[in-house]
Structure formats: structure tokens, C-alpha cells
Amino acid sequence: METTQQEQSPNLEDCLKLLKGERDEQRLAGLLLVTKFCKAEDHSSLRRVYDAVGPRFLERLLRTGMGKGTVTSGGDNNRDAYLCLSVTVLASFCRVPEIASLEDMVLKVPLILEAMSTRNGSSVLEECYEFLYLVSTASGNGIIKFYESGGIRILASQMSSMQDGSHLMEISIKLLQLILSRMSLEIIQNDYSSELLVIAQLLDALRLLPNDSWSYYIRIGIIAILQNRVATAERLQALILAESMVSISGEDWLISQVRTNDAQNPTPADMCLLLVLEQSRVEIAVLLNELAYLKYKAPQDTSTTAEAIFSKRRNVAVAYSLVEKIIKLISNVDENDGNLLDECTLTKLICQLNETITVVLEYLEDARDHQQRKGDDLLASVRIIGSYLAEVPIACEEKVRVLLGYMLSVEGEDEQSPFYSVCFLLPLLCQITMELEGCKTLASCGGHKAVLDCLSKLIGSYDYIVEDKGCIFLACDTAMNLLLKKDKVQLMLDELNFVDLLKALVYWSENTDDMSSMMMASSICALIFDYTSEEALLNHPDFNYSTLSSLYQLIVRCLASSGQDGNADMDLWDIVSAGFSRWANRYPHIRESLNK
Image 1 (cartoon, rainbow, N blue to C red):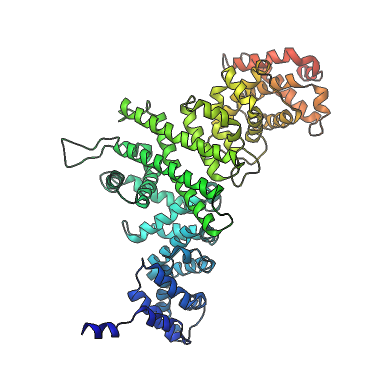
Image 2 (cartoon, rainbow, N blue to C red):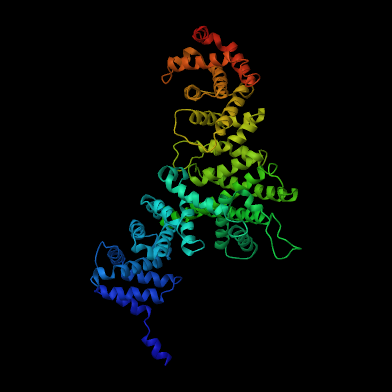
């Protein structure tokens, strides 16, 4: 009896024969069988089925379901069924990463998005989102196609109506997280500001939910995963979830008290924080080692290597983000009333952070040895180092000194010259240049030129955008620290360095009403004038008398401001006044501005 039933039940070979048939009816029957017995984890069978049916029929079936084409069975009467079948099958195929990364699947992203925006598409939304997530995860081209096809707009319009806790909501959030991790937030804000506002309102609603519900259970779940022996992929997913929660609720979420049924042995408040940092440290060490192998030893110019690098960079970014948030949490420890971090916990955190930063520095050292200066992973590495050294400037002191010049030369993928790497290191540079040895260290690697160039870009007529405007004053303070110690450091500057900066100082002073900013600009100008003369500046091809006249007016205005604001900016006024007495004879026309 059992033998008879097995002979009558369809098997994979029967399905493949139907899919290879000449008539659409045979292929449709074969696809229906696929949905009945083909398991999601059976990648080899799914691959055989995909190869048998081919991309052209799948495309035609999808278009027919959308009313854009026809198959020779049923016509318009079965349109909804065709759409449901095609999307379900496509999502099943894309569980195989090699299929999901194919160009044929990437090119279907706009069609799937269009189907989602129609009434008929509402019945297969879950399968549509699953398809989009799998294609976007498997291929960098997938996320680009999703973005360029207006996927953010559709995602934002539908998320608010999804049922809380549903699988559909889960997939959509994972897709959103994927987009934000791979695309520049600045670009997304420029292109989809109103859509981001809708998503932000959704996140605000989540923040208002009682902490005793979803946030509480997520923290318990993350602790349970990271405490137990589970697969690496599950630990990584726990970190991704933790990073999302910290982004929504703030860094303090990591140290909120976790209640348990055991009143005598409650879960320590710092447990989630310590577990997340420890796992982030481990992931960073493993992933950076694997990235170094893929970049410098593995076969290059292959799609497999490129996709592996892309995936590991994305995962490193999650771990980096968590570490940076923990650094921020520690930096605010004295400001938080009733903070749950004791001295013992802080010691553990600092120890783990030191180990993490050492690993990141070794990764950068390896990149330097391979003459690699460009890459978003390298830039992110400089950023996390800058974040930590801003709080602990003496950490890894010798290694930082050796790599400082290299770190200042690192560029992101879209940068034409180093800028953001210098910005990330400015808090450290501002602190170390307060001492003579720090100035010598920076000057010895040519870092003073990088700082002046960065300052020019920050205050000049450029399109450089930074998150923290305090970066400008850090750059100003660093530049002044160097210029004030120029004689002891033997600081060497060429005309190109200070001509661009002088023009930027004019632009900055003419576009601000803040007297402190003007005084800062005037002080830097006064110190630069020590290096040159009016004649030399006017002989420079990129400098003219109009710019020089504006600088004279700036200096005169600041000299005349003495005593207007009490003791405010008196140190800066002293710098300008002392500079004027040193070089006034080399700038004869400045006295004309004084007499006006």
C-alpha cells in the first residue's frame, strides 16, 4: 500500500519534466507542485527547479499577474492566481543566495514594487517583502535597484498599517535596517525626507510603548542568546537587534534593570551592556581578520569575493556602531543621575574597548602595509578609533603615533581627498597639540597640512557636511595650537597650504554674525601672516587684493572690538594684537584699513 502511494505521489523528477514542457499549462502545473513539496532549505532542488523553468517564463508569469502580459492558459480570469503563484515562487527561489543575486532577479525588483502598490498585490505583500529582502541581502545591485525604483516611498507608506508583531512587520523592519546600513543617510534624507518623517513617527510611537512590553522582552531575548552557545549567525542577529534598539531608545537601554522571577538573584543591570560589548569585540576581531584575507590574499575580481567583502563590511558596521554607542555611554557616565555603572563595570568596559581598538589599529596597519588608503571600512575604522581616543587620548599611544599619518590620509569610497578621517580624529588632535610633543608628532607625519586643509573645507565655500558643528572649533583650536608653537616645532608651510585657508577664513567671516567666530578667524589669519607678506600673497596666482582687503577689514574689526565683550575672547584679541605688531610693516596697506 505504501509503495503504491509513493509511486502515485509526484517527485522532483516529475516536476522537472513538467517545467521543461513546451506548453504553459505544463509549466504552471510544475510550479504548483513546487509550492507543495519543495522545502525552503533544500537549495539544490530549488536550483534545479529554477534552471528547469528558466527566467523568461517567470518574467512572463509575473507580468501576466500584473496585467502586463499573457500566458496561454486562463488569460485575465486567473490574473490574481498568476500574481500569487509568481511572487511565491520567486521568493522561494531567492532563498538560494546564488539565485537571489542573479541579474534576472535584480531586474524584477521594480516589477515587484509596482505589484505591491496595487490592490491585487496586497494579498501577497509578505512574499513581496521577502523577495525584496532576499535580493537586497544577496546583492549590492539589489539594494541599489530597490532604492532607485522608489522602494523607500512604498516601504514608508505601508509600514504604518502593518500589524504589530506580524511577520510582515518583521521583514519590513529588516529591509529598512538593511537599507540604512548600506546607503548614506545623508543621501536618503535628501531624496526621501518626507518618507523618513513617516518612518520616524513610527519609531517615535515605538518609543512611547511601555518599557514593560516589547523593549523589555527584546533585552531578555538578547541576553539569552548571547549567554548561550548558539550559532554565530544568531549572535550576529542579536547584535543587529541590539543596535536597532539603542538607535530607537538611546544608549541607556543597554543598562536598564532587567527583572526576573528570581527576586533574590535579579539579572545585573550591566549584563546586557557587557554581553553586547564582548560579542561586538569578538565579531570585530573575526570579521576584520576575514576581511583582510579577502582583500589581500583571496582571488580578486570574482563575484564571490566581492559579495563576501560586502557582507562582512556590513556586519562590521553593526559591531562598530554598537562600540561607538557604548563609548558615548561611558563618556556621559558622570552626567547620568543614578547611573548603574560602577567602577568594576567601567574597568571591564575599558579593558574590552582597549582590546577592540588594538585589533582595529592592527587592521589599519595591515591596510597601510598593502598601500590601501581608500575604503568605507577603513574610514569607519578611523572613526571608531577617533571616538575612543577622544575619551582616552593616551590609549595605544605608540601604535597611534606610528599610524597617525596614515589614518589622516584615509578616504571613503566617494571621497576625492581625505576629509572625514581628519574630522574623526580632531578631538584627539586638539588634545595632543596642547603639548609641544603632540605638535611635533603631528608635524612629523605632515598632519598639520591635513588639519589646515580640513579647516579650509569646513569653513570655506565647499559642500562638505559634518554632523557636529563643534568640529569647526576643534579644527580651529588644533590649527592655533600648531601655529602658536611654530618656532619650537619648526612648522613648515608652503603657500598652497595657507592661501586656500586665508580665502576660506574670508568666506567664513563674511557669512557669520558670531563675534567669537570672527575673532577665531582673525587670530588664525594673524598667525598665518607670520609666514608671508603682502607682496608675496599678491604675487600668488590664486590670490587677489580683494581677498587681502577683506582680511585686513576682519583684523581691524577684531582689534577695534577690545573691551566690548568684557573678558570674552581676550586671549584671541591678544594673539591678533601681538601678530599685528610683528608683521604690520610687511603689510603696508593694512594701515589704510585702520585709518578708515
